[in-house]
Length: 432
Ligand code: PSV
Ligand code: MN
Image 1 (cartoon, rainbow, N blue to C red):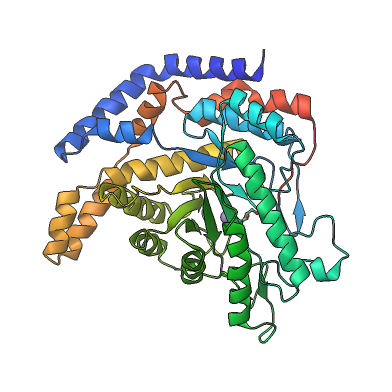
Image 2 (image 1 turned 90 degrees about the vertical axis):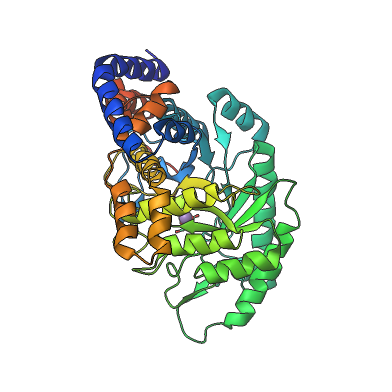
């Protein structure tokens, strides 16, 4: 039996076996929400339109600087990565998009790759450049990224980084992508190592050359991060620097918020609100963390934070703030222990749940509490929503689109991993 047939079979079996329980759960939450004046159908309809991109680099086991433990059945090439995303999409109906990372997903045949994407029903989402690994020119010191890429004082390194990014835009365009995500590892480990202002100027000058080549309809996303691999200063270190760079480039430059790229206790939902306010929220890299950029499963550590971020999105959407550009939703995680597909399924579920919960907030109650300076009332409005079990709404959205009621257990039931492990064997996928 093919892997696709295995998945279809498991999805069907599960839908049959769990239909009665699901119907009862859905009726229960619908009744509860009606009491709050919330229409479950509006939520189901919104959920079924959400699309969460899968990062190509999260389909294999991730590593740390201490080691990497390959798992059986990791995708050996870009086609197998797309096949895994198609499997995920078949289960969730919310992940029909892949985010590629170049050169990890380099291809000599963009036309063929585009055809394979179309055949697999997968869209090419924002594409990532990589100027943090030296690739094929590690011994050419002035062109090396060792001391930075677009911020480097040496012209050769900057030119190389710009050429790379321009090439990634061209490839992305051939594949149907509409955005370039730029995360820079540029920074320093030692006070005085470079001029902060000089590095920012060089970064803006270099990125302006990339920005000038953006095709119609394209965006450039700047992704900030406070530290790692640089431990004293990073060039694009926070949302302020990111906004500054984006503004200097032009209206199609927007900021990307990776949830793991903040110092401990940062108020990420407020950062999101600020970027919405400025019309510069490009998109997200969803993950979760306890200490730093841990890249753990979205919603596994701080689900309330995820809910509050989604509430800002629901709010912004209601205010028409995304008329010009809706943020791209992407996962950016790394899995050392879990099966990568299961981790993506869990992250997707967490985002959909948080989004659905955010939609159940009694907006009138919250508005009144704010107008009356009633913090306890505001907390009640938010936490009543956060504590609502909306899983049946998420399942209903998926059921109507032909997906699995419970993606993880359908995935396990299908034997997909065992089947691909048999074919692919034990080979490390490209990525970090
Ligand atoms: C950097 O930590 C980051 O979040 C960026 O998005 C990279 O491109 C990605 O991880 C993949 O390594
Ligand atoms: Mn990221």
